[in-house]
Length: 376
Image (cartoon, rainbow, N blue to C red; front, top):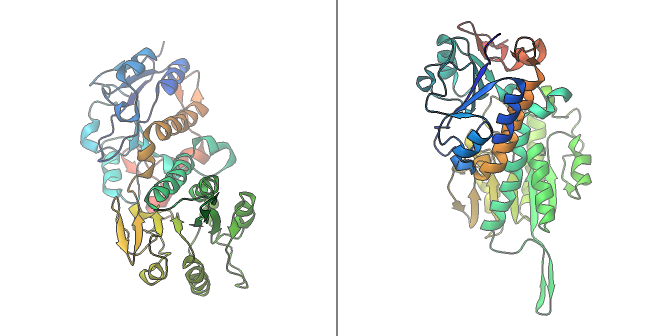
């Protein structure tokens, strides 16, 4: 009988990373598939999961979790030096930042790992439950509004009191992907008057369905903004100019602005200039969800509150890590959904197909094999 495949769960070592790649829930499910699971001590501590909880779920909690590992689960891509002991050809599954950490990806290849980048998961119907970008962005959109509300020195909802009426805050969401939609919903729940914009015209209905006002450039022909796989693409100069003028007039009236625009593999597009910030009311707040990729807002600095022209600007380098328990639970389910979907009962391990396997696989047999990294 073939020995059970060994899954190792790493303790994250990146600065500020509080998430973990497996929970007791997913450990039980992996064991039910026939795998054994080994967890590094303290792996879940910052996500409020004790070692004893993993042990109770059937995992082995050991410093030698990597020894003989066939699959290694991580949140962020680990330094190659910490991966000794795993089987040659072991899978490394996580958010590996292929474009930002290309040298590290090359080293994974040279060490014989088959690196699988979860952020390269194709946005197709059957992969929705595996989509880590969506699950983490959803929480990020929520957290962005909560943090902005905390910084904002006034109430969000309209309040009618005997002493007079407090006007509702005006919130503007720029970029209506998963994070933006959740930001709209959260700001609405807090009682703000919400508006939103996106380069993709198809998002108008989504914005309105959440009770927000769409702010879109009109009469610029042929601009849809929809790239491959549902991601936004960069716009023409004509569109960028028209949008800048529209945003400038709208942003001056806003109390809260949430920016969420990202383009995979590229620096974040600049959405708000210093001159536009200067038109905003003192006491207004901007939360830049793209600050870790260079920022949508001129002058934003990761993990710092920057004040410019009386406007407070904030953005976190790792927003999902601010909600460690929930983001870990969703991320761990994404990984389980991914591996279990391809689990071959006869072989006792996952066997990837071409459509998803080729999309997420970065390295194999000592080489970098992903077309997006090879310029295909």
